[in-house]
Length: 296
Image (cartoon, rainbow, N blue to C red; front, top):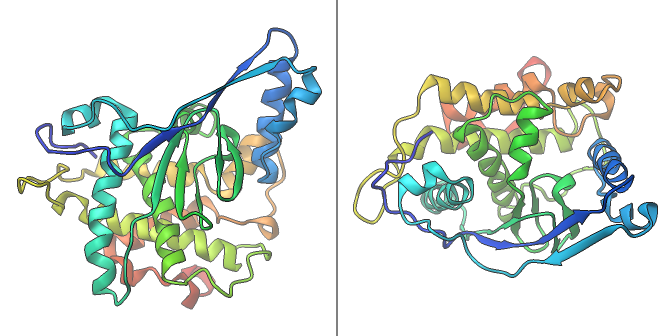
């Protein structure tokens, strides 16, 4: 999905923070890479153990809170990934600010923090190994854009701007679930293809698809669409990203057995199915908690 070059955007919906970690020469880099892999498999960030395991051969530089520089036009969003994320946040926020009241709920914006290396959140410390996530405690989305390269290089996503925006729109979907109490009274300890945790993730995929379908109709302050009409090739990029983060695909890539009973996010097919459901039917098509069998 491409921004109109002359569209008026800003970075007000995004902040930047984080600590950049420098790895010393020797075995430390290998240990950190191993911890990254294990963190992704377990869903727990273990990279904080690296100093103890490497003899303290890491140094960290604390970043300062700030915004995204040089991010005022659609052209800049097309050229720079951080500006693209800030501009996409503006468009996603604009969409839900209008859409959610029409669905009968009040809307307020989440926080959105771009970080590099690691950062502190309302849900605890996070690093690049954690991956993009939404923290309900502080109602903030956290994203390290280096994740997008890993999504391509390691997990086989085709990449592309809409693949990146899909990830952000999915996390925004978790904010919608949080402020509308969809995520309340669920059994998120359960796992499996039909578990509450999988249904919650698939609904966020569906909400992302709903935004994608409407994104090119959102207008900037001058009445110009932020984004150009979507193409099938761009939809395919988003579907590739959805497939890349399917539980079954992650197992295959990491060399572990595919065990549906352990799934927490859904299979590649499930994630693609519900993204398309959102693009076809909008948010009203996204009640993943009222379907069963092959429809899930």
